[in-house]
Image (cartoon, rainbow, N blue to C red; front, side, top):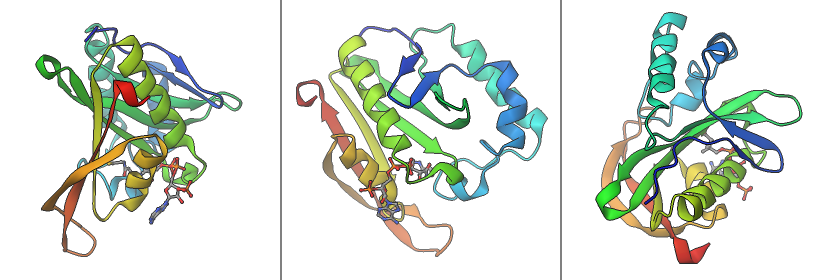
Length: 185
Ligand SMILES: CC(C)(COP(=O)(O)OP(=O)(O)OC[C@H]1O[C@@H](n2cnc3c(N)ncnc32)[C@H](O)[C@@H]1OP(=O)(O)O)[C@@H](O)C(=O)NCCC(=O)NCCS
């Protein structure tokens, strides 16, 4: 594993870049971390105040000094709208792999943005950073995320029974695991 940190990455329609303090207001008022619909599927809750959000984003900005910190803001190339985020949420250095997490604001769903961003990050981690494997997992009540993993070239490893409680229905669902190896790119 080569620690390269959060470098700017590009795809056909997107720029993946570091969060900056200038983004805080737009991210709050346009609903990035405050997007309740998006957060229904996430383990964290949306921020209620801009100060709360600023604290979180500033802590990410400080962590960019570390070369093993990977957290990108996703921006459209043509209109420069901020549409989501993607990160390495768990890094297993000794085992040479990492887990990615991602979210797209709900008003931008189903335009292929998550798939495009994930493909680029997977390529960066496997080729540039020399990871052996990238994994991701999603709750059974969130099939769209599994579809994105498939479209990004990941393969299903399996599922763990009743690991996630669907807040909306009160029903436990499995946690479903996907991964991609360097030689599967
Ligand atoms: C999951 C998420 C990232 C997808 O982002 P996106 O930009 O809409 O994804 P894409 O447009 O690249 O692909 C979405 C795919 O899911 C499919 N999909 C959408 N809703 C679906 C559903 N209820 N069941 C099955 N597939 C679904 C879409 O049809 C599309 O597949 P297709 O291209 O074959 O038609 C977005 O919904 C999100 O941020 N959700 C909340 C946060 C989250 O769940 N993060 C992942 C945690 S594991």
